[in-house]
Length: 624
Image 1: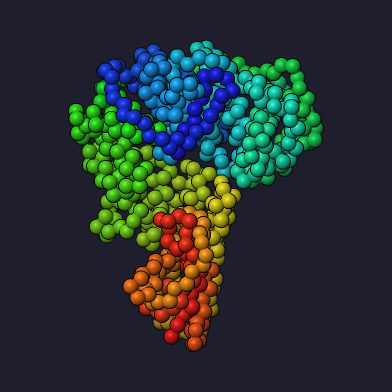
Image 2: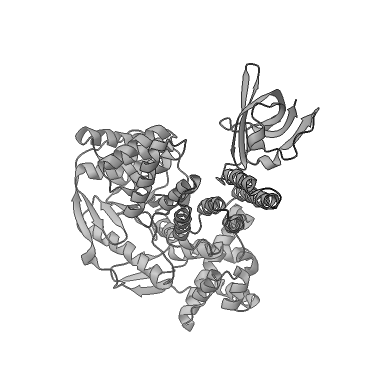
């Protein structure tokens, strides 16, 4: 979960991953909080109804700006956007990141907090400065274009965010694309990246990660976006839309740029000239008439409900002690508050107290079946460990209830696909659920991995590999790339096993062929991603007896018992294990999943740098 903050003084923008707790917060006195629900936002304010309506109108108009600019883009996220519009500095400090409470700290104008299941915006209504909410608009832009991550190159994603971050929404007009003086100064002092390089920068590129190169990447992305937007407006063109259409058709970014923008050398020269000009244009857009304020729903919140919203924000903002202080007060007056149970469940989940989190969400489900998040988290946490047969019906029911309550929430579809796929039942339904999750969040590589799991369970190994190849293109780190590659190796081995068994079926009787097919089906790989293993220390050896062998192909877990010592070992891919035998010739068709139990052996292993992770198995020498 990331917290994005906006400084009130221009140029001081900070992206912060917050991991701090804070002193307890108590409600000083009862005050009036108002909720304004527009079609796409929920505004909660302690100011007044007029201010709440104004904020809701501003965000709705910002959304309409995007819809007008990119009519083919599905821009609405699957989880709600909740805007906390705070009237003054005192009340803002009761909610802002704890790191900014110290004397002399940077003064904030707003922040954007984005999590997989919820999106919060915190705004100070009395904020000052040229663009006090620039980072709010920057990150909101990323949220809106998030569903285009599958095809949108990084330069365009960041360029649009930089372009729209200085948006100013007024009563009768919106100003778009106001230039950044800091970007212009940097561009005039630094050599530009070649456009062919800019167009191919991705999350793995040093131009994105290294600070000295990352700065020019962001600035040049803004400049090119600004130049094309202004030039298209002057020429009545639509080159950015043409470029987008080509990318959606899977044309590579450089070829698409050449076809949409023309000769790249000429474009580079024009961009360099553009950066040196004395002044920059920006856009003035009349008020968006599509925003219908009569559709806004306004409600004065009870003190308990307002406190529950604040407590939830504090929990997501990692101000845990402050959240607990409010929650204790709420529970004294309303022990069955559903929002509080969800918040407590989230906090327990964040601390890896999964049993306690499951109990909280189960209670929330019982109290209010209309909470899609309670249904989702109850089921998702229940799936994290062994599932008792008696719990399976409730897990499936909760996931289907979550989908019904919020059809746009991708994680519920993904978990239902994984649940059905792991049990080898209703596989076509599982496949469709997985594909729906991918369509709702195309940039999520994990959803594609689960679709590959289901396809393997259906015996469609080749299709599974195609899905994993697409997932690899979306990997956001070297570790994620390595994980997907490891899973792809497991799927390749599964296809090879299918081919070997098909050949064997030609040589044996029909009854034996049925037995072979049953064995093969039992060894369908489960491609659940695992964190990257980092070895620590020297290779070690132990002689004993193997037992507790468990496969989740290509994963293998076992225990070796040597006298009074028992050691649990793990491998992410048993095809990489070096097997040998001492003093005898093992069966050439040795199956590690079936043939290691109760076998004497010598194992080679290495410890993990993560003490919570089991040592990794490297080699097995079987003994008589």
